[in-house]
Length: 101
Image (cartoon, rainbow, N blue to C red; front, side, top):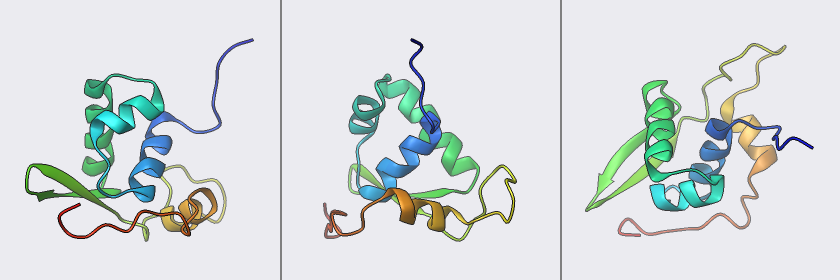
């Protein structure tokens, strides 16, 4: 049986970021089963497309998901990124971090 997923690596990376805005590329890579270099490319793709904004916090990055944006592919009434993430990310377990994570 072929390995496959309902969500792309980009979608899964966005979920990691939504769950923990201070997530490290190393942790995204481990979660997705890819290299850090690939994780870096995916996060850059998301940032260039405007879905996440990267901010420096000391030596680390913090990310802010732009939840108001529509999905990239038109699939009907075009829900926003935030509406999709609300279904996929348990906000009750979202890590609350201070500004210095």
